[in-house]
Image (cartoon, rainbow, N blue to C red; front, top):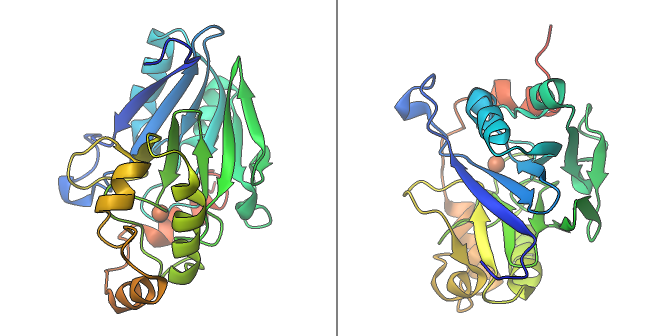
Length: 246
Ligand SMILES: [Fe+2]
């Protein structure tokens, strides 16, 4: 960690025991804490993991200001609304989700900052996996949601997704960040924790710099993936910021 860095990042894996192992989405959540003020944000919190996450926040003496979502997830229900009830945190979605999501307190548009203590996250609109995806940038790291994975990328065949749009988001926006920027993805299915923008430019299977846009579109449009098991439950709930129907 650089001496000047004002924040710490805690990586949280989706290993909750209430879910079938086969049914796990391998989602990643992140707590980013401002060191001086102990104010924190959590990114892409998962409903089933809320007790663990609240315990960590408490142990670390953190005040949760914001529950931040990279997009409307299809594979799990967000813990955002429950975290709001439990901690008073505000719910933040990217600006691309405005108009679709109810129950959010803030829609953070492209280039806008979310401040917590002396630290801040900057929204970077990265549509393509869904039409409303947003990445969040720290000075040394980026939380890419399902736009960019380690050596991969999110599917583009659901929720207003578009391979052409995703290509532009990754190549023109995420790859414009410094090479040493740490990439924290929304999922990883092979137990990896982080990558860097420079690594992905070289080694990403479908989006490395040697691959052109037409090839990427063709590859993505040829892919056949099963529908996410929980999509019919997760998407409606996440359009209400994870608020369950009563
Ligand atoms: Fe997703």
